Image 1 (cartoon, rainbow, N blue to C red):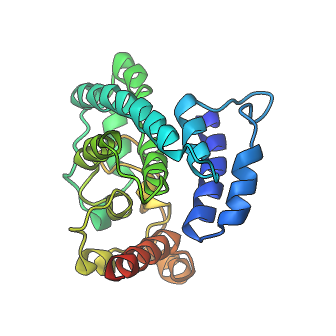
Image 2: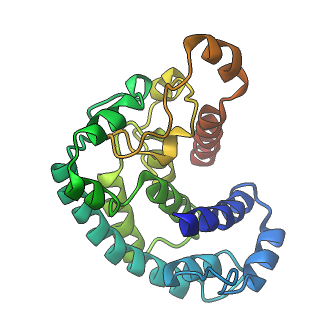
Length: 239
């Protein structure tokens, strides 16, 4: 988990530069970013290939295929293992709406788990990792859409929760509607990096209604991010 959090910071920093169009700075950082990110952490092969696609390299097609190929294998095993773990641990996908989910869904499941279920739940491919993978997919070269990239998208979009509007947008799902976007209510946590199947609490609806009325007005990163990407993608589509 610590390693994933560290890669999260690097990945989202680079992705934000790509999304905001700071390509000169992105190229400079990505070009000289070492494979060993620190004494403790090294890039994974697919992460390395993805970073190469962010540079001004002429071999971006090769790196795109390497990144997508490795992730296809990873996601195939991860998603199928998740389906098995979900049955054992009682996770239910696409059953609870964004605005209805609370942390109690997770805690009530966990309270009834035996030792085996608790250990098995640790192997679950998390919504946190899925969210990062969606940003990686979105920031791959727009002008190159090879077979492996299309296969990766299909695998991910088929696994993506219907209520995860941000990840659906990042994966190029054109069926996300303005009504869905506009009716979403901000959460205390960053909603898009968690599944709503009970696998992680993510501290949704932990605060009192009084606290929400006072503070959520100024704490809407999840909805602001969603609106920003919706408008950005729609603007690109209209060109």
